[in-house]
Amino acid sequence: MKASILIDWVTFTLHFWGDNYTAVIKEILGLDPDLFIQSVRGRYGYRAAVEYNDIIVYYQGRENSGGDGEGRSMGICVSMSGNGCRTYEENGEDYELIKLLKKLKEMYENDCDSVNITRLDIAVDDKSKQLCLDRMLGYLKRRQVNTRIRKVCENKSYDLGNPNEKDAIGFYLGSPESDFRYRFYDKAKQQGDYEADWVRVEMQNRGVYAHGAMNAIVEAGQEYGKCVAAMIRSTLLFIEADNSRVERCSVAEWWDDFLQTVEMIKHLEKVKAVQKADRIYFWLERQISRNLAMAREMFGQDFIDYLCDHGKKNLKENQKALVDDYIRKERKTA
Image 1 (cartoon, rainbow, N blue to C red):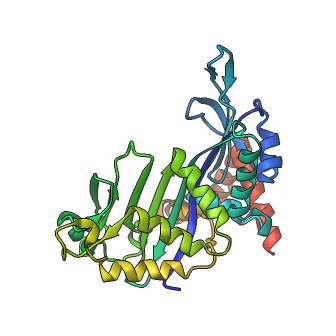
Image 2 (tube, helix red, strand yellow; image 1 turned 45 degrees about the vertical axis):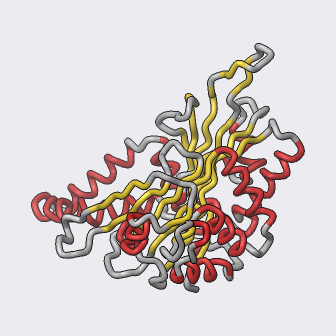
């Protein structure tokens, strides 16, 4: 497939649940609360949180003063980053994000005060060279674009370990304060792959835009591609300078080809989540392995075994939970 679509961030707030975050985890997310460990700190005005591989549930929020003078709790906030979304989906067919969004939409329609969708990001991946970031930036700098968005922020990243490689570039279209914003970047280079072609287009939706995106995605049925392409067409078009009036300029052929490709997508993509255990593995391999080898040569294998036994005795609860979760998943896939 030339392009794929995935939901890459979901944040929502549930009211009328008090601080009963375990009930939210079980009844709304359908997950086992035992998978979640206490987070170091809260965020967004919440004093406490629990997390499971980038799925974070915040609680103990401050009270807001209502219009009638009565305080209302901030409720419970559930936030999934891109990797959190992938973690959620890995639990099985019942954990498709579209099903979760449908549940939230139904809750909102039954009682609009019960749930608030605060962020919903949609990503489109191009792995067939249809999009070129340099070309897109060129069109933007020449003002060959039809959009109501005005602010562009370009950024570059450098890999000091690969001085001969082309620098990774990306840019935002829309201000950081805006409820709707585009992000374009080289996803392959972000992940350290300097050979692959992989440009990601992200639509970052907050506030009313997040609510609108949820409604559109849920109601799209299997026409996800047409839905997302329509959202992009209505907010951003790269154009040719063939008319004095922007709205009458023709759409750039390469951009129209990309959108037509998106329209044909029938399924949301599912990607393997990066587990914390994987991060620990690669950190040990890349950063610690040589020092461990030196220690074994100098002090012997018994010293390495002593370090492991000593560390095991001093594991914290969240570290023990991570070990248990890894073992549980290994047994499940065995």
